[in-house]
Image (cartoon, rainbow, N blue to C red; front, side, top):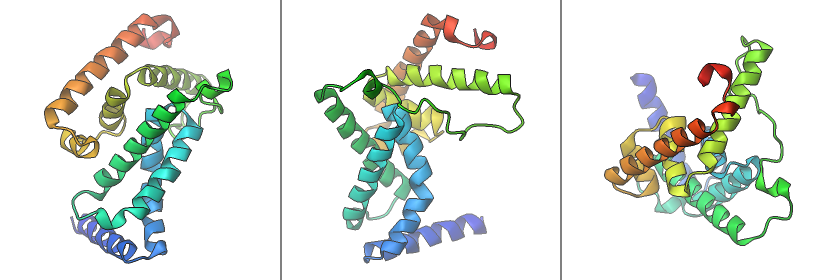
Length: 201
């Protein structure tokens, strides 16, 4: 409990420093949240480069509007900026015709190793990677509002109330969007059972 309290007080002091113009303090906040922000942006956008761009823009917006933060969960405040920035990028991408097929997909096609266990056998790594790719396809086909709620709940394991704060919607809206998103993901996976690793069919 003492450790948690220390962390919270530390964050509070860091935010105050950043609000008073300390770039070093703001950079500490970036370091603390950049992994979470990128994971959310990647799952919402489905593209690593787009996620990195969205995070960069979101942190810049957060820095410029930091004085508007008046307490409550800083994580929720920041992730609201991240998800809104992802929405802006997705809207822009829909208006702009893609230059090539590569623009429509994650260009790297690489597993960044974030979920990799060093205890896994090579064939287990391949199965995990295939399942992750299929799940990301399922998530990417969701409407943006449902996708965001699903990512925050089922990927980032956030509480419904926290999600409601992040997306600025009532609790009932969160639950109904999540229910619809889970149903659509299930239907997508059932329709593509042949792509699932054998043990998940």
